[in-house]
Amino acid sequence: MTWTFTHDLAAYRAAAGPAVAAEPVANTILLTVLAALERHGTDAYGSAEPFFGWWTGADGGVTGALLCTPPRPLLIGALPEQAVRELGAALATEPVLAGVDVLNARRRDAQALAAAWGRPSEVTEENRLYRLAGLLAPDPAPAGRARTATEADLRLLLDWAGAFKRETGERGGPSEAFLRDRLSYGGMLLWEHAGTPVSMAGFFRPVGSVSRVGPVYTPPELRGRGYAAGVTHAVSEAAYAAGASQVLLFTDLANPTSNGVYQRLGYVPVEDRVEVAVL
Image 1 (cartoon, rainbow, N blue to C red):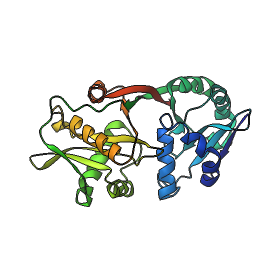
Image 2 (cartoon, one colour):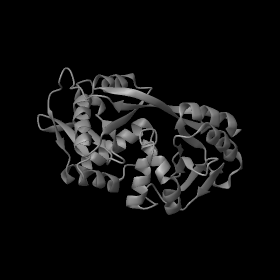
Image 3 (tube, rainbow, N blue to C red):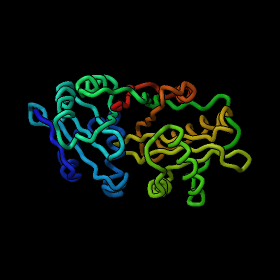
């Protein structure tokens, strides 16, 4: 039983790809980041070289994986208990992991890893993964309608994506290349009222028949009018139409408003993930 670490994307894909794909809900972020690296290159998230890891069990099969696109957190997928314990030890000894100062993992795994890290740390973000159990229309219905965003909307999308990242504390600025890719498959929607965009939402390309909604953003001065519910309902339908059989989204547990909106649309909790950072 052992962890293997590498900077080789092809080796990671060959060794860990099937194990990651076998749990597409729990590994949804791993899958979308991996797809982006394959589509846009290993510099898709910046100039720092990404690294990868996978856990090989006693039977010789791979049963868990992680990846990191620095300076973003170490992203840890679904792992067996033994792999979590061994990763805790590796955080203190493995050279590839030496620069890691933030990790993103399932809540129970993050707690175990933080305890084993041997460095003072704190939980900096708590997110809940939701799965769409049955799409419900917003009630009351917001004024306006949804439409698919086009190239003409790119500047607005970049502005709003940047505002979303600043508000949520997400690292890095908005990527024009990623937004253009979203536009290429109809993956960004706008909610319009009186002909003016008032909210946006996107969805990732389905991977293993699973798609994830995000980001969802309404400018602060336009909130409280149901626009986010309207555009989230529309983008959820669009994800199904694009081939997804399961639609997911994450919410910040510090935002009870958004958690309530999504549950009223038919999303049900799956599990929590947290970010843990070195103090």
